[in-house]
Image 1: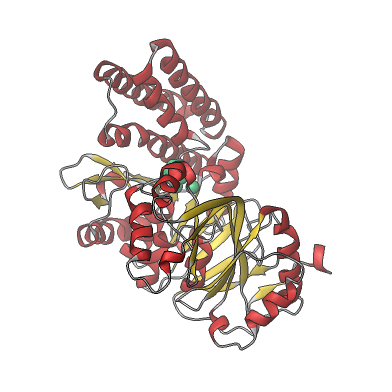
Image 2 (image 1 turned 120 degrees about the vertical axis):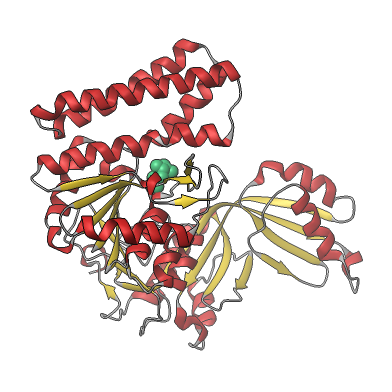
Length: 463
Ligand code: ASP
Ligand code: MG
């Protein structure tokens, strides 16, 4: 058995669903268990409907529900055979009727609870998984739909529920293998239920998590995450096109990259798979023949010092300066206490004897933070900064990586430097305006030579 997860863009239209059907069909002999996200931006639209229901007027949210139904109906009709259209219409009628009732209920109450948010946002995956099941049948696959809410058991932290692993694994192991022996299984990602059967969700982007939980629960051979990129690359393609594909990466490296804005995958989501040593593959549903990136539990031998360069943009640097800090204790505690009080997470920190620099990525409450800090220190901010992060297990073993980094960056103003405690990365901060030049220089320095066992050269740009 393999788990194949398709995200929102991979099932955003009839054409996309047809591509998915072909990809799954080509792997039917491996007994796929398919996990799908809501179609396109459906989850956002459902949340907008919930918000509109509270705010009114009635016509507005009813129009939005109507549009969402139209969208699902239009795309589904193209992938569902004529003889199943009546069943499709009945299914859509039923679900959109329920959704309308739910929205009207919210409008009356005038209040949105986490539990009702989950009730509303669950419709995206309930609809998509049904439509994908029909489409698979139409393309000749014996297909069985399972409701994830019967299999994934969570606590009651609505909108961010945590799976109860023993119960969940027991249900998955008892239910799926006998059915997957005969049919392709399709289930919705993201949605689950508490022990007493109330619908919950695993948090935004939760379908990857579902795939990983299912894979771990059934002891899958591998978990395939199908997205719209070729896998992990040596550089963020939106900044430097033509990065090379990383063929194999360790979980620790992938987690580090994910934290630094490589939006391919949230690291926590693959943990259940990694704990059971099940490899996770990142694959491109538009280019299914590209072998993608394989994430494995163990360290991967690599001749290159660095695996990939990631960045986190739109960062604000806060510089705090006080001569009172000299030889005094409790200063850092005071600083962090302020950030804590205003619920502002801090990412990177550098300190010297009389000053502290740190970065935040959410400046929503920065004015309040600054006002507090200025009670006992000078404090100012620099906006439009970027954390650039070089990741690779070899960084800790290879002497001279830092020297190569800062030689390559000659002429670029580096604001802050940190080598993480994990020793898997070197990070530093540059201004947004210097970003492209910095990445280009580093990419040339670290990826001109490539270990062919680990990287696939992108001939197009770097030939
Ligand atoms: N549909 C959910 C979301 O948009 C879950 C997912 O796509 O993974 O957050
Ligand atoms: Mg997603």
